[in-house]
Image (cartoon, rainbow, N blue to C red):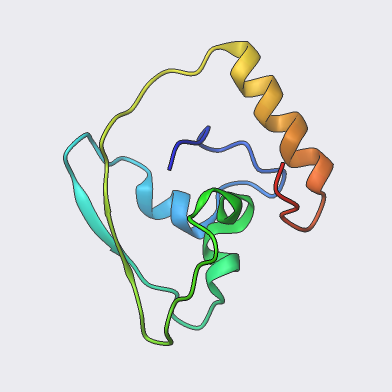
Length: 92
């Protein structure tokens, strides 16, 4: 999954909070707790493989493969796409 970190209008998603501060090569487990998966990932849900069928009690093992600086154009484009979706993840 490739995305621009921290651009959602509502702030960081729960997934991004877990990802914050991680370095290349680090791994961590993402579990929803009492939240729905779409709430954990927020606007990033659209970047996960479709259709996502996650069993109750399931989890993701995440490995950070790369971290890159985004240029201004990428950030503006990603913010515009996110803003178009408003409160739902419409697939932009």
